Every structure is written in C-alpha cells, then in structure tokens.
Image (tube, rainbow, N blue to C red; front, side):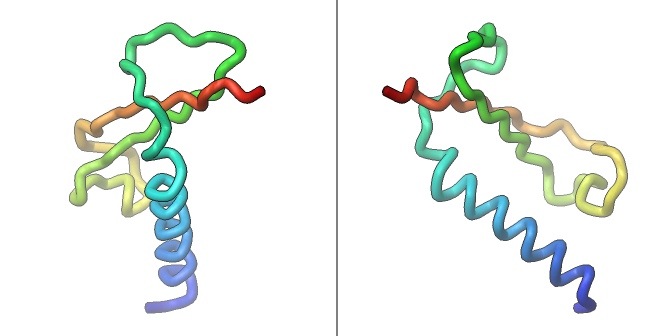
Length: 74
C-alpha cells in the first residue's frame, strides 16, 4: 500500500470510529423530519461496498440514509 492509500484508509478508519463511538449513540430521527434551528443534525450515508464513491467517482448505489440529532445542551 502506498502513502496515499494508507492516508485514505486512515481517514476512513477515523470517520468510522467517530460514527461508532459518538454518533451511533445519539437519538435517531426520521429522514423527512423538518429541521429546527436550535439543533445539530448528523446525516450519515451508508454506501454499498461496490459503490464508485470509494474510487473517487460519483455515487452509483442507493445508500441508506440515517439522521441523528444532538440532544439539547444546558
């Protein structure tokens, strides 16, 4: 694996770790729910393994979309 491939793999691992350790535990909301100004939303796209987005091209799959919301902070 060359340097660019290692950096890309590290970036993907960091993003996966952020989802696994933080976002996954937040409350889920429906994807068609209206946005409210005082909340922070996280939209996560789960692409298929064969999707062209992993090769640097445009997405050619039908990704699963999940929205999470940060709870209000005091």
